[in-house]
Image 1: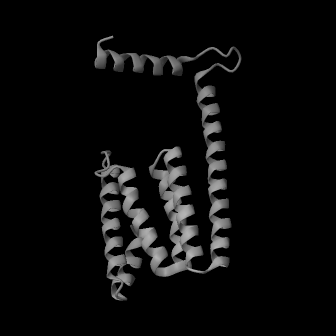
Image 2 (image 1 turned 90 degrees about the vertical axis):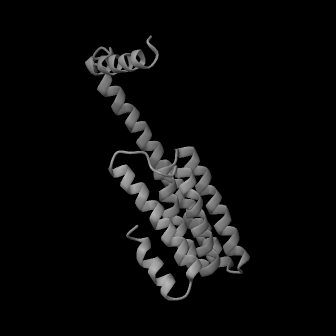
Image 3 (image 1 turned 180 degrees about the horizontal axis):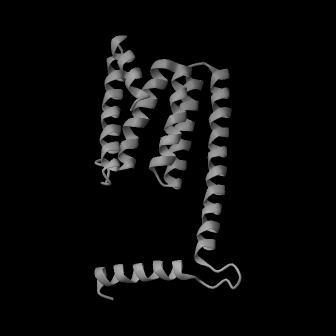
Length: 175
């Protein structure tokens, strides 16, 4: 919200009312989602629906600003990986990657399209490598927290988790 607000104000004051208004709407959606999450509630708008105006804003920025509008694809990728499942984020990121590269190439700026293709492509590869590493480390940490290192037997933490699951299942299904 803080990053988009000045950009929206600049767009509106320079006469780009469509882009500025779209950004203000996006800021409102982000603010509502942030408030809900801070209060421990579900977001008012599911992340995949929130992604649609983000895609529209990035596309408008690409169309209106050309190569400098492509910089908005990078925060989009971060947003996608924070808000969506890893598969959903990968699909959304690859889609914006392909669309943005095609839009830059269509506008006749081949060198900028090539640089964008290489930099965002490398960013996507690095993000996925980092997430794979984090996922593996998290699995190892969870396993080490639940098992005795000498015997490999489950410990009390594992029993507590199993008991909590059983109590929850009893309340839900009576089993």
